[in-house]
Length: 454
Image 1: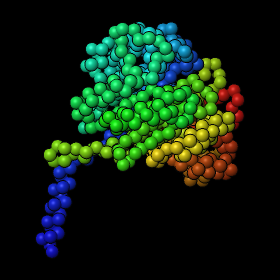
Image 2: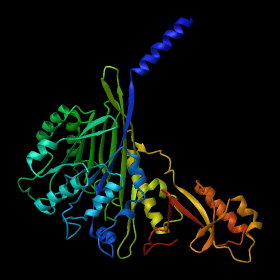
Image 3: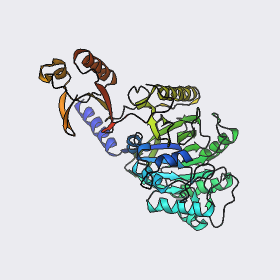
Image 4: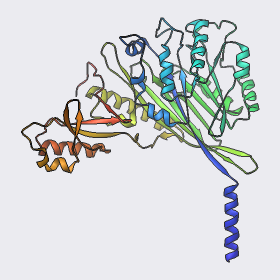
């Protein structure tokens, strides 16, 4: 019996040693746009532009992905910077996208030619200067032949990325430039070429569908099926500016996301004021003989809503819904209600139409916590005699030229609010307040809307 147990142990150990399992997390976001109001919001009085505020709340999530991919629906054509209908965003946007954690951008969409040949080529030049891999548009056919499909390598994985658009708003392509258009004959040729790259999997990022429609068109479904049939494993969609369903076919090991909605834009109307970030986790098992098998291990999505105020200039902030939907500190009542409407609309749509793709169950960002700020202590109060302060670990902190009394971090919102109520009731500090810290930074209230109420 002992010999049998030993034999089974040895066999099990050798099988485990013969396999090497690794995982790769992919994050996809939808349309990255810059309308006039967004450009004005980022403009600095001293000159230049700053987009750090806009991306600060989603940056921790983007950075968590091994590879983050977004649709750059604009040109980097230089000044004059302009939004709709012919987009040219400041170069600083591209800098911030890289600093925020984006690894790859796709550039084939209906706005690729907004500034014609110069805009297309300068966009490529700016992205190349920042070492941001990109695909979908090319200076010429030679560049396309050399660089397409885009091969991305990360954590022992290799994948081929393809990108196409339904059109360019009627603007003809100026030779020798190349823009990938949705043409199944060409797509089939490209997918065959992708196979020669020996990738672990193939992704096709499509710019397609009907604007503002929450249901994929017959053509979207047809093209998606064509791509899957010819070797693609993931088909990701953008352009409708609203969410459409996500489908994970576990039996066939494929994912189709028909539309991720707007990641950031100046569109403020219902359904268009946000989108979803799609997480896809790939698992690769490599045998001792170097053969490998890649499966989609998990698929989930994270809603993201764009907060903006109504001041001049407006300010824009991309907010992960999971962290902000129960906010009672940073946003006014009107803003909270608008976020709630977006979240309810999105969940109603996706929960009824999605196939095997649920909202992410991830934990809140680890550095998301609260502190109770009491402010400066009046001279007439003996701080040391207040037991309630000791109970909540309220200690003095030097701030400018005075001491400010602040609690230890509290990681649960309900606990923090209960502690605040207790302190206000049982201490002289009636103006005590909660301060939210996100990604290690103290967060001030978001710039108010004209219609906002606390």
